[in-house]
Length: 163
Image 1 (cartoon, helix red, strand yellow):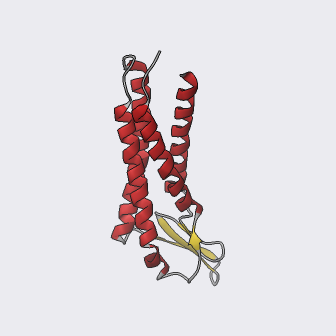
Image 2 (image 1 turned 180 degrees about the horizontal axis):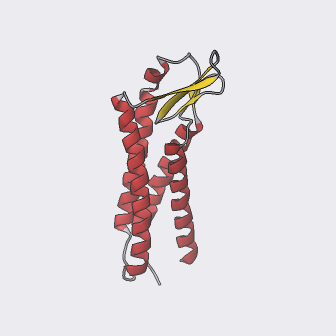
Image 3 (image 1 turned 135 degrees about the horizontal axis):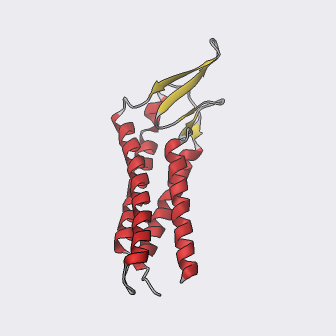
């Protein structure tokens, strides 16, 4: 049982790390060259002045929704980990971790929805940038965090506390 708890806790911490990096780092879309776009700022390199020009990207309603969903997924994932630790030490033997599993399932839905909205509306970002580029590693990390959070939530729902 202790090995299972260790694996579940490690999976949860891995999901938290993936979500932190995906939400806060700067590579949701990679432009040709060394430029990349993130959820918070749009920074491009200006060759003529040899400086970075940064602007806020929150003028799009759908991008605000992606920001909110990714932050919500972080909050829910942290909450579910705290809830798991609380339930682990206070719940009676034989109890199920329903609340923790439900929080993790909500985390996976929030990540899925945020990444899907970004994928659908990526062309709108490219309208004011040079053609080309690809999704960055933060976008890929969000998609990796989604199934991991889903599996974690299902495991928590089926996990029963033993001695």
